[in-house]
Length: 129
Image (cartoon, rainbow, N blue to C red; front, top):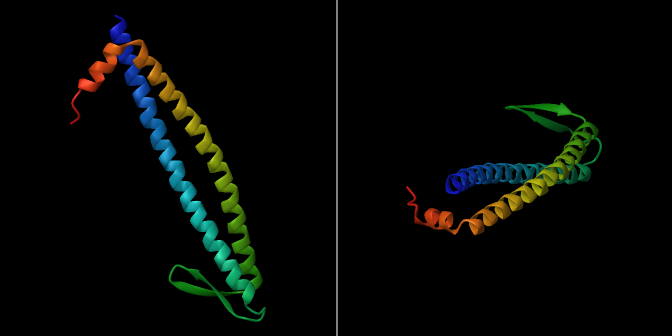
């Protein structure tokens, strides 16, 4: 009876680990994407600041380019930069939470395997397909 309960607990812990790992990878990818957006916005702002105020600037909308004042373009890039920073901060918090969850799941798994060495042996003897 204890063996069956341990197997069920192992399967539950395993599914939590897979789910947490997936979420963690997703958050890491989102952080990378936001960092890319932040860097593009920063580089664009730096280039716009070098231009004189009377320079014609164009915004890309699909395949078309629309004339926009430099100040408006600069404000848009600054807003994108700030939004990216905010999103990155939020995602970092989520990442830290998921990493703590992952450590907890690993500890639970370690404890389970220490309690039931027979389960650890069964897991090690399983073939991967």
